[in-house]
Length: 375
Image (cartoon, rainbow, N blue to C red):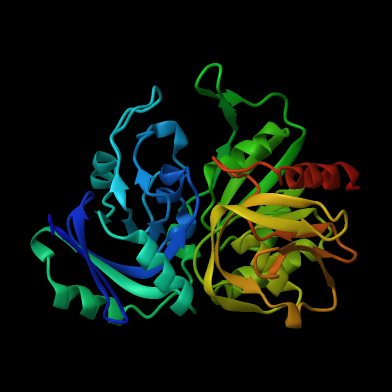
C-alpha cells in the first residue's frame, strides 16, 4: 500500500492513503459532502475555510479542472479526502485534479475508506482532523495537530476570506453554446454585495437579473453602503461562526431597518437572523451536499438544494420580527426566514446551485421583485 499520506482524527483514528495534492501538514474540521459533482466548486468555495472535506462519491477527478468553474481565486479548504482518484476525460478540462491541488496549495489524501469515515462523522459529529503528506509523514504529528485544532465555534473567518477592496462585477452566467460567460445587458438595479466569502456564481445570477454589482469587504459599514444609494443589498455566504461576526450583525441591522431590500444566503442569512434577535447554534455534522430536500412552508413545495453549513438558526430563539419560510426535510432545521414588515429575507442553502440543483433560483427573482417594488 502506498502510505504517502496520513489522515488522523481528534479521537485518535488514523487512515493511510496516497497524497494527491500539495505536501505539508494541515488541520481543520472534517466534514462530509454528499454531492456527486462539483468538486472544483467545493475546493474553491470560501465557505469551506478551515474545513477538511470528505467527498462521499467514490470516483473524483473524471471531469478534470477548468478555470471557468472556479468559485473564487484561491483554495480555501484545509484539506480534501477522496476514495478513488479518477483519470480525467472531459472536453472542457485544462488541468488534472492533482495538478490543480498542488498549484493551489491544497493538501489532499486519496485511497481511504470514505464510507467508514462518513459513518464515524455521522455518529460522533464533525471531528477535528489533520492530513500529513511528504516529509511531514508522521502518525504522532497528525494526531497531535488534529487534537490541537479548536474547532470553528467563535471563529470569525469572514474577515480572512473577504476581498481586500471593493470591486465591480458584470459577468453573467455560463453559456453551454459558447463555453463562455455571458455579459450582462442593460443594468436595472444597483446592488451592493457584502463579501463574507462570496461565490462567483451568486454574482453571475444577480448580474443575469440586471444587477450592476459592487462587492464590498465584510467590515464595510452601513453608512458607507447606504451612501451609495443602492436598490438592494446582498449578504453573501461565508465560513465560520456567525456569532463571531458581531460587527456585521450591527451594520446589517441598520441596512435592513432602512427599508432597502436585503437578501442573505448561508452566513449572510444567519447574520440577518442575528440582526433581528435570533440565535444560532453549532450543528452535529452540518449540511454539505447537493441533494438536500427543503420545504417551502407557504406553498408546501419541496425543492432539492445545495447546502454547505455547520451552523443553523435556532428555532427556539427566532425573534419576534421574523417568520420561518423554509425547513429542511432531513432534520427539520430552519432553512429560510423573512422579516414580518421589512423587505428582508434569507435562505440557508445555496440557491445558486452551481453545479447542483437549480430548484431554488426563484429566490433571486424574489429579490428582483422587492427591488422593483421599492419606493
